[in-house]
Length: 247
Image (cartoon, rainbow, N blue to C red):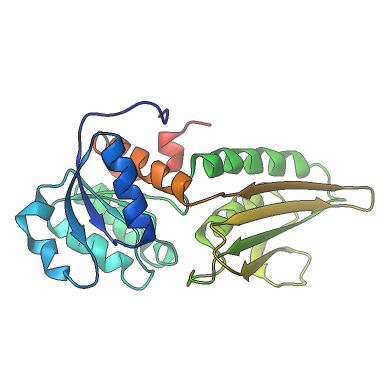
């Protein structure tokens, strides 16, 4: 889906009305969509409102401790969900997959909605496939985020790490701050208000190959979430960035 393509007007419910929620609202309105409901910590009863039930899709950006329950409440209201909350998906993937496949629910989940990160992820997969032929290169991953981020490593870092491990025969898994050469080392840094930096390094005695995605702001994530919502209104099931972007 091209960012300049604008879908038909959607009715959107926002679950989580912090910095991301406000930015998503601005972009959604600029693309001609309607915000019919805004749910935050102080108005949880609005999950039962007619306004919420009227939404074509709910966009959910909250904390890992409440994201799954929020999605269940949206499912109960018959509303499709786009969720960018991280730190919860692995523990509940089997259940939400069952709900999408057997009960007709729809969830678009991504650890990162940035179009740039989607491209970066494709480069990561291709580079890892190439590097499988060159065992003299060891690989490590580092992510940096703002001090308010609760989960670590980031969901994006986990996704990138899993993509590498799937393609490198010499890596059996990943771990934080590991010294085991069979595991991909993942480091996380929390400082300031950094929106998100992900760096992958392939190092050998001869040289160093580095790829980095450095987000300038949350705007790219917010635009991607609205694009995902536009996609989700026309599709069903358990969806992700690879469904929306075919590369």
